Every structure is written in C-alpha cells, then in structure tokens.
Length: 249
Ligand code: GLP
Image (cartoon, rainbow, N blue to C red):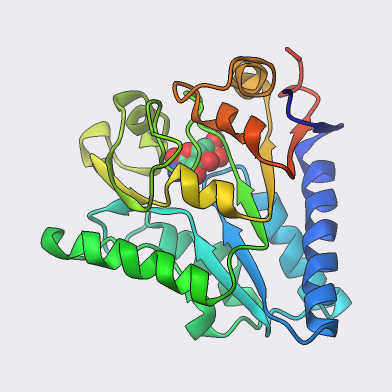
C-alpha cells in the first residue's frame, strides 16, 4: 500500500500548505471548546512550517491558547539550554513567539538520571493519553528512514524509550555541534507505536538528498528496516514533498 503524497514547487509552499492545515485544525478544536493536541518534530525540515505558524499568530490571530504539544524526541544527555537541544530549538523556532501556555509544552527530558528514564517515558505516554491522544503528528525523515529517533530496526510496537543513535545519524546531525565527538550517542524518542496512534500524520521532506529514502518509504516494502515505511499501515498519513524530494517516485 503506497503512502499518499502531495508535491509542491518548494519547501516554502509545502510548509505554508501544512501550516494552513494545522491552523484549520486549531480553529476547529477551538470552536468545539476542545484542546488541539499536536505532535511536533525538530530538525531543519519543519523550520519553515514553524515560521509560517508564527506569522499566522502575528498577522492572522491564530491562537495557541488551547494547543497542547508533545515533541517526538530529544538528545540524551543534554541540557535544555544547550545550543543543540530540541528544547531550545522549539523555544526559538515556535514557542517564544506564540501564546502557547508553558504548561502545555512537553518535550522529552535530556537531563534525567539514567535510572529514571523508563518511568519518565511511561509518564510521557500517560500524559499524551490524558490529553486525549495526538490529533496531528508532524514528522521529518532521516536519510536512513528514521522517524523521531526511531532508527532502522525499531519495532512497530516500540514505545517511548532511550535509543542508541546510528553513526550516520550522528554524522548527519553533527553540523549542529562543534565536532562529531560532541554529538550525543543516545536520545529519548517516542516509539513507532506512539506515532502510529496519532489520528493524522503528515511527514515533510525537502531536497534531493531525501529522494531515495522517500521513494523507499512510499513505494518500498513495509519494513522495520525503513521506519518511515511502516506509515503505509497508518489510515491517515500524507507525505508533503517538494519536487526534489519527490524526484524518485
Ligand atoms: C533528526 C530528528 C528527526 C528529523 C530527522 C531529519 O535527527 N530527530 O526528527 O526528522 O533527523 O532531520 P532534518 O530535518 O534536519 O533533515
């Protein structure tokens, strides 16, 4: 079963389209008096999307008052104010610029003592459930097909947990750090099963370098070796691509 795709001229147009989808969902939930629960991603891919949401907040009265967010992942260990932390990324790209309530922001904690990580991950999943589950999950995709930090081989039943990063992932992300040795070897990530539980999933991918993995995820076998390909079994998942990322479809 292939995954439906939407192809745009460039990342900006694709991001604007996804921002409109998110804004419509936020407003629909607001009108119904319900919270809007968003699953959010980091990396370079969603930057334009967050910038567009900030613009809509500033210019089109889009309010994040009723929005609850759960981020996919965070390096481990890492301090929240470290330059490369996903806490800092989210504050700078989105949260500092909109009216979201601080208590509605959830991001995996990179500062936990190791013996507390397991219990913390369970509690994270319980908070998602208590919020009513994720209405819309935003994803990027790693060159090896990872979603969140679910590296190849991650089980479809995997849950929120500590995971060892592949060296290719550490290398791909090393531009954020002063050198490869500084890139953490571990991360906390929501599992594949948590992602599959979201009611709607939108995966974004831009650029030629993502074309091969996008092709494998969309048209290849549904296999744990390409974590994004398991989205073939999700009932409401769309890949939003630019022409370059869609080049091998
Ligand atoms: C990172 C993140 C993922 C992200 C992916 C792609 O390591 N943990 O959530 O989707 O790798 O990164 P980028 O968007 O920079 O290409």
